[in-house]
Length: 386
Ligand code: ATP
Image 1 (spheres, rainbow, N blue to C red):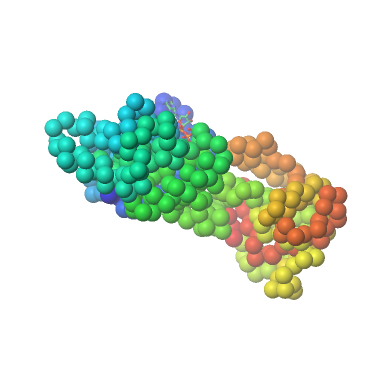
Image 2: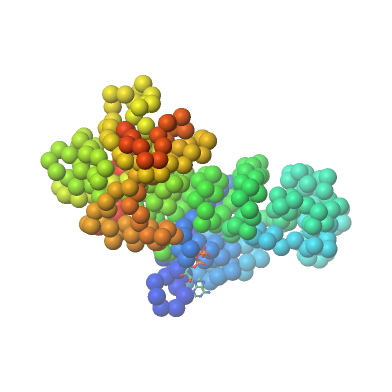
């Protein structure tokens, strides 16, 4: 096993802006790191540079203590686990796992091959399936065979490129937990590329968010959710996404399209001498004021909202509240939403309420927010000010 260390890594394909732009990231031995971002942000290119399938334009890549920029992929001792598992359909599970060892002719005795295959299959709980062909395995078992091939080679790290993107939602959920469990049991350094923020949030020790080739933030899932560094990360992480609204500062009040929030010290310090900020509020941070828990009474701000549509999903009630987007932030938010693979900014607040809430379509509801949960962003740079 090994650490993977990237120092100012650049990939330039032609003219244009670099596909990967000065990325520095240290992945510890045994760590599970997710590379995430929308289509074209450079995550696959970065992974392919780590594994050696793509040249590095500039910067330094180290595996363990060794600089590997110019090393051939097979000499890097990394295992790429492909999306389609790349198993041989005519070989048994045993032979599929043994395959990488048989390729290195003469290097391992039949006994050694057997030992390694049995050790890997026991780690992966495949012992009972060694005689089966891939066609007779579940998706999860196939994934484990693919990982078994990496284990027998004693790869120093696993690299995954969107391994679950072809699966249906249910299987994807199962496989996600399976990969997380295996990675924890094996303790092998893992880099995992996805554009799916649920995978990013549930799998990794740390998540690295990329935008247009530039690393935006590397943090624990919780860290990204609670303290996104900018509008992009705030909008990318979280489902449904954070609500963004214009906030106009007038005297001691932050005026939003839906509610006036009195300025406290934290908000005032963040605003500085700005007259306009972009306000971010997560759907989860609203409550139905009529069924507020005791600890929240007496703090926070309540306001009336005209609910357009509600969706009751059993564990949560979503309420949609239309509002007027302020001209000053329309273009910026519209552009951000398109970049995040949305359809452009829609002027509606998404509110996630306790499923016990009786609020229904067309109601005028009394909602509650805690100003301590409000994020403020600079309207020009998009940086988080709170
Ligand atoms: P996706 O999720 O769509 O695969 P990604 O985040 O993995 O996206 P990359 O595939 O790494 O993004 O691509 C990053 C940028 O580099 C994109 O603008 C892409 O068009 C460009 N690119 C990727 N491969 C090549 C190549 N071989 N030649 C030229 N440009 C490339």
